Image (cartoon, rainbow, N blue to C red; front, side, top):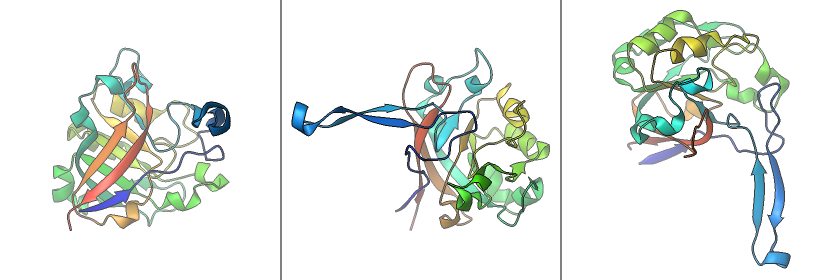
Amino acid sequence: MKIIDLTHFISEDMPVYPGTEGPKFSPAKSYERDGFKETLMTMYTHTGTHMDPPAHLFSGRTTLDQFPITQFVGKALVIDCSDLTEGQNITMGYINRYREIADKAEFLLFYSGWEQYWGTEKYFGHYPCIDGEVASYLVNSNKKGIGLDTIGLDPIADSNLTLHKRLFQENEIIVIENLMNLHLIGNGLFTLCALPLKHVDADGSPIRAIAMLEE
């Protein structure tokens, strides 16, 4: 089995969503004083490669800790839309290229190539986003989740978070943002494992996402 890491490192200088503070690491225990090392880590629940549940936007909806563990593992497919340029939408045409396999997948991960701008101002620019028809497909096909190699599901200028609301309002689905290495997977089904931290009332969580491919 081949394992591909889909997760960005967490560091103090990493990109974070505009208006959010970056993570902080401060020494809590030291070898010299305490005989062991421990670090205090402070960060928002939507830092780095992370996962959103419906409760991220809607009070009373499902939090990550309320999902069964099976929600976070399943058959996934990468949709290659890396030919898109700034501000263009990911349409059903991209899914239809792989439609028979896409229908069988529990997760769709969209490879736009935007990962190449990680750590630059352009990462916060006009990255490709799914359109309304793709959102409807995800909802109607009862996918477990969607994944993206961009900082958000919605355009950076959409403070209403229209696409998030479309997916989360009535559906048990998760959104994974800031993925990496999607270009290494290929165009067949594979097993995605994307596990959030197990904390109470989780409106989001950093995750360690990996792709498991049969060789």
